Amino acid sequence: MAKFRRRLPKRGPMPFRYVLLLSFIFFLLSTAAGLYIVNKEIQPVLMSIAEAETQKIASLIINDALKKQLEEEGDTSKLVNANVDKEGKLIDLDSGGVRKMLAGFTDHIQRNLLLAEKGNLAVLDIPELKESKENFIYQIPLGQTTGNVLLGSIGPKIPVRFELIGHALTDSKTTAEPYGINNALIKINIDVKVNLRVIIPFSSKSTTVSTSIPVDIKTVIGDVPDYYNNGGGQAPAIELK
Image (cartoon, rainbow, N blue to C red; front, top):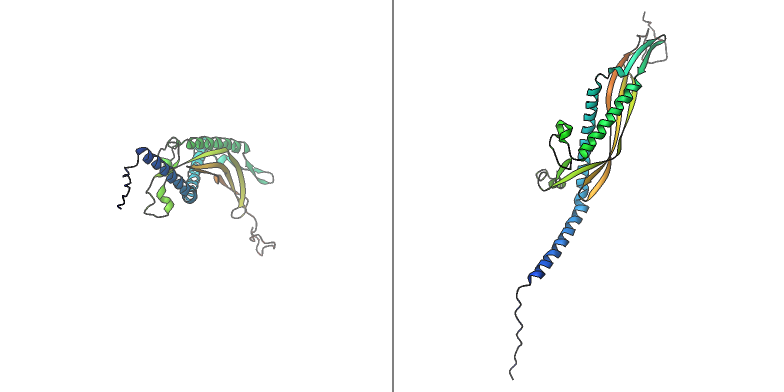
């Protein structure tokens, strides 16, 4: 008795809606996998580069703010004076002038950092930051994350922004150091501390930029002593007349 085999119907191409659905699912999975790789592997390297560049740019902005403030103040040599009284020389510090300069300096820093926060680097007129960017301060080529010099400039560029946290903190510091024989070196420094939030896609990190900038250095010359024994406690063998 002859047996007849049942013929299976030939399958045609997959319907377009199924192809579209599978493609969409594959796209979601590949995107999620890509984001995971960026977050776990590339993100720490990107953040390290972004933080270093942000601190560099913030330092340039702070130094430029001091430069413009000193141009407005003019002569700063009068901040430290050596007046002669009955007992000798008296070092006089113009605390009012220092406070005025400090307030103007803080205002310049605050204003410049807010401009940089919006990406308006061209407005700051800083030679090292001539290139104007929109809404970000720096771009990191993705190839830099490989550590390979040949691939350093290859790949899409990751934008870097920062936000100012609170206000710029400034303070003046006056120090006196021995200089030569019976002389003193008076230094006025401005200590600056700025808290920033570095922002790259998918991540952010807080960082602090601290710097100390010399404003004025003056040598105060004292009277020439009758003898000098390099700070020892014994009397000299030869007395100068």
